[in-house]
Image 1 (cartoon, rainbow, N blue to C red):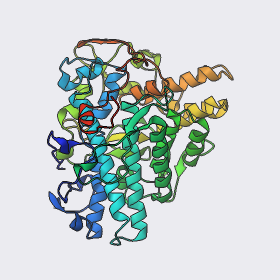
Image 2 (cartoon, helix red, strand yellow):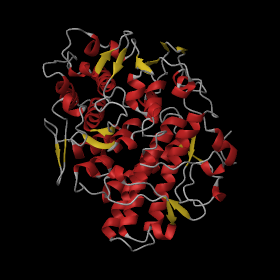
Image 3 (cartoon, rainbow, N blue to C red):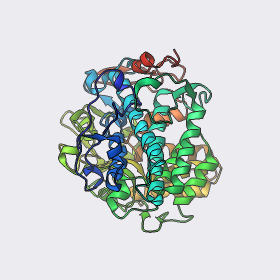
Image 4 (cartoon, rainbow, N blue to C red):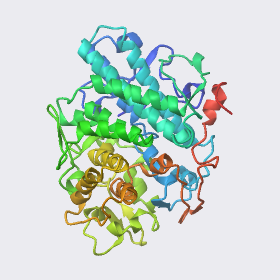
Length: 489
């Protein structure tokens, strides 16, 4: 798939996608749409046929899968800032300054993630506005496409607010981001006041609620069900957002739409099934369109694979990163020689004695393993934590057991009956084990306003970062400060 190159000028301003009336498109191979790759066409022509409009929808997911964003690098950054991995390579090109917490607002990565997210947001805004004023596709298709755009916009904003703004529980009224909700086709609207953390979260939920209403329950193919937003994906993402806000009642309300009241906790919709895969071997061995995948980034051919340094497998196996001996790898589930947990099979040891994560190495170089962004296992654990917080101990334990018993059917938790605090912490730990390397650790620390722990590696020492420190979250990028006069300074 061809990615568009943006120069380092004011046109890399995050919200600009259209230049001088020319609309940029990409190949649709990634979403299995049979359209001819196009370099650039006029905006009028881009919305002239149903096929070309579908190509614009496909372009949303291409923006989301930018190598600096969910194509790999953004997830790696979230693992580097946490404490599950140590860094081998001291080169900043591999994120050493991300790992050791020394990155600045002028840093390439700080600007690249921001720009990729706002390009994605502007792509969604353009599609929403153009579809509202044309009649080329049916009303049903129009509603579906706008819902996909709102899902993608919500996903991008959630990523931004978790990275560049104070955690929700630190100060929801602090300034967070410019909330850009209109299509921008020129560079005249750079100046926009920042919205608060709470306002950004309100918009995210508003978009996901709207998306849930108009997204299809299922598409015609298993690949589309994984790679395009459908109703269950919007609901699942809401459980993550509400969990970040500690809105336990809403986590339960949303998760209950996807999770039945009794085991095996499998959702059977109209033409689609979601549940835990029966084994980890199935989950991480090339079966990327199975029932556990709610939303993923697929790579169908070698040329679509992210650049080497963006690929998850490259970072985990080259290895740029190796598992921190003081991180979750020290938990008896993964460390004890008598543990029979199947997730131990996802850990290997190299010739230097370093333990490496091999979740994403099934296909080998150039690493075309799909990137899972939402899995059913996460929904179960989000539901479990919310249930535990509401003191529904039996429900929380049953959901926790469902995830653990997939990996180790014989395991028995020793949590004391009615011990709510211990159960909540056990679920939090289970999430670290289950979602290791999938980009969750930093955000999990942020939502609880916990320090970023100190860690050591061959690249040196990374200090503990307290929530009150100026580098606890990433700074507003220098590019935004340069072109938005209303950005806080």
